[in-house]
Structure formats: C-alpha cells, structure tokens
Length: 310
Image (cartoon, rainbow, N blue to C red; front, side, top):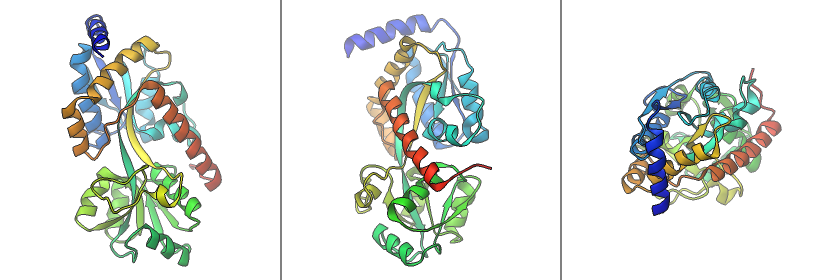
C-alpha cells in the first residue's frame, strides 16, 4: 500500500503540469450523481496533484455528456461520471453516435439500491402481500416509471416476469412527475433509488415493500431483499468513472488508484453512508465485469418484454 501511494504521488507530480482534469456529469447540478461526483473530485484532486473541475452536461438521457467524453482525448484529463444505464441500457434502446462499450472503466464511486415502494392506499403491508394482491387483481395495479426504457421500467418488468404478475406500466418523463403522482395516489407502486424514496418512507407517505440490492438495508431490517423471494432479482444504481476510448491502462490505473484511496477514507465513507450509498467502490476490472453482467440482465428483460423507444 505504501509503495502504491509513493507511485501515485510521483505520477501526480508529473500529471499536475498540464491542464485541469474535468469530470463530466451528464445530468443537471444538485442531484445524487452531482453530489457523488463532486465528493470524489474534491478528494482525488490532492492525491493526483491536479485541479479537478466538475461540469454538468445534461441532455438526451445522459447521452449528450457521455458522447462529449467519448470524443475527448484519451489523456486522462476528461472523465465521465455515469450511472449504469448509460453504459448498459442506452446502447440497447437508442441509436447512438458513439459506442459506450469502448469506454475505459476506472472505478465505481458508490452503489445504492433501488427499492419498490407503494402508496399508502395500497392494501399490502409487505412484499408477500403485494404479490398476492397483484396476482388476485391482474392488470389492476399500476407501476410508475421514470420513462420507457429506464432502470425503473426495466426493474418493473423484471419483477413482473419473476413474480408472474401483471401490472399496468405508467411511464413518466422523469422522477419528479412520477413521484408526485405516486404520493398523490394516482399510481400504486414504483421502483426508484433509496436516496430518493427514503424521506417519503420515513414520513409514512410511502411503504417500503422490497429492496433491489442483494441484501437487506440496515435502516429497514424488516424489509426483505426481493431476491430472497425471487432469487436472482437485482436492481441497483451506482455512479462510476470511465475514461475515453483508447485511454492507456497506465493512465486509467493512476486515476483508479486515487479513487481507491479516496474510498478508504473514513470521512468519505461516512459521508456516503449519510447519502444512503454503499462506499464499497471497485477496481477497473470489477467495474468492467459489473457492466457486462448488467448488460446481460437488461438485454434479456428488454427482449422478453419487447421494450422499444419510439
């Protein structure tokens, strides 16, 4: 570990002589993606001896910012901070001007589970009761999503398939309008990340039925992971860094080393836990493997549910 840090700082001295590094966040400022990216940038900068600027480049479901980074020079000075769908789902549904599969993985900043929540009027107190209710009333319960082809939509389709239930899918244009109607009782249930849903669960406006991660959540120990009932179910969100195609292993490895060191910092881990995020992190190889696994999972869901984007 000591040798790795020495090498990191030696590389940083040489790296610092150029332009500032930029981390492109393909979403508006103020959200979870932005907060996690800025935390990583703040702590990586002194390790790399490099000024790191965080720039928001929103549009086209994240594709606008992603394409900007994809076309950047592979010199380690431009990175994309991305959730999984840009790398795993968008290539399956959209005609893109770039190939996300050629991004060079650097590492995952943090992971947070997607959760299944229900409005207070739904007469089900837990996952088992909800599944029983849905089976007894096929097509009568509605499930909101952030839009066709989003992770919330794919998670709904995965649950429908594994649980053998029929839910009416109601797509919205983003989280905000979907959540508004969910809280108002216009739709019955929804998948979204824990960070977004937790305040409404704690205020009892929504009921937490199931967790999309592999384990139960410490804050809600009585709520099962959906995989306990339906083995193999998985729905999580994460933020990770990728570099432009052609970035050398040495350059990507230097940045990955800084990120890995940041993820071991007690203060950083504490701040991530406050955001309800798992600060486990990953190596570039682990991130690449995760991208592969999630692409395979969502490819099958899209195929079986015949999902298309008009």
